[in-house]
Image 1 (cartoon, helix red, strand yellow):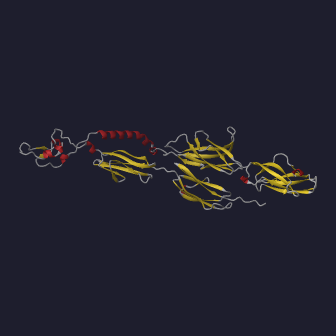
Image 2 (cartoon, rainbow, N blue to C red):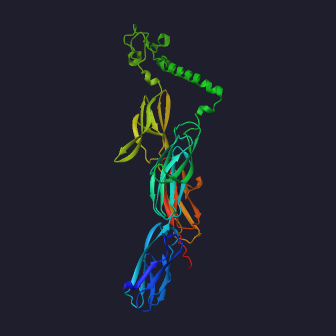
Image 3 (cartoon, rainbow, N blue to C red):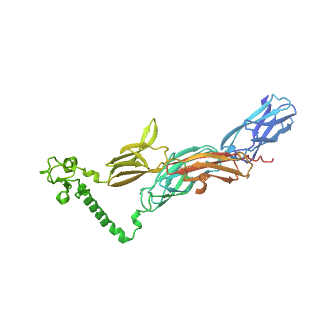
Length: 480
């Protein structure tokens, strides 16, 4: 019967142990039976490898007492999560295995480790400040982490995709961050901003800063300066007067009177002489003597009767053609985007688009869709005019491949990471920036000491994408 065996723990107070540590506990065993008996101790309800018996058996005469000793040794690393664990010590009689006594116990695995934080990349140059905040939980308990950012002048705006995350034991989270400057001028010198990202833990108002990482955003305007800013100062001051002179010249050319064409320059037919003053109207000189009117006096439209002799040729034919509109348009076709070149031309005898003849008004679909320039030229008897328009197609970056030549290695073994990308402006692997000449394709050698998740981040001004590979490194088994 269990009443014949009395078991009492000899330790007082809470029992605490660190992951990978060891603690020994002693229990007093008393034989209340009438026979000499031997008793064996067992530890139950714990994972294999977490406990063992040092002094497992004790032989006792009736009424005598003895001790058994057990050891608690949770494994090292994040496998032993912080918290309280219950166990059971069972002492069994060898003479009568049905007789045993169980004593419950409890111990606490203490927390260790912290949060590792990285900003990828640490510096961004461009019109958009796109970063990734990489968080890793290196402790043996789940951590709730909140993100915040600030700068010395408090002028930047920070947009976290998620501002608070729960990271499991040995887990990892990647949070996109966009840094927005107070102004985005299209012309001017680059503007550099430094900021600080903090990973905190705890209730609002009592936050504890776990990690702080610095970043830099260099905003790049489209143009470093206006084109005329490179001119000498005297030339810059003369530009307004030059603009006024050109405007006056254009107004004069647009409003001056146009002379009619001189068609009388050609030799006149027999019986006719050019009209005085070179008006271009033919006047018969023998109309009274000749019984038959000269046919040429009425055959030419320009010789119609009238004192002015004005030409009936339209004045617009003497002006160069006018390109009223020339642009690119984006249209929706069946749920997909399509791009067209559209033009409208007036007063042209011939119109060409990139050298091919087209109508005066029309459009053409851009196929394939890619960045390029189009040239429209219009011609008539008075001259030729041309305009160009460009199509810039922005596409997000693409990761075509990101692989490792070995998925599992021993600590310190070599692994080659290889990648292929498209439309990349910046990229990094594991937080290390990739040189510009290797953005499209390349490789990098790493030697992990433990299981690690390598992340490839590719960016351009249109967006960013990530891909990852996991290299498994087995944990060495300690020699007992």
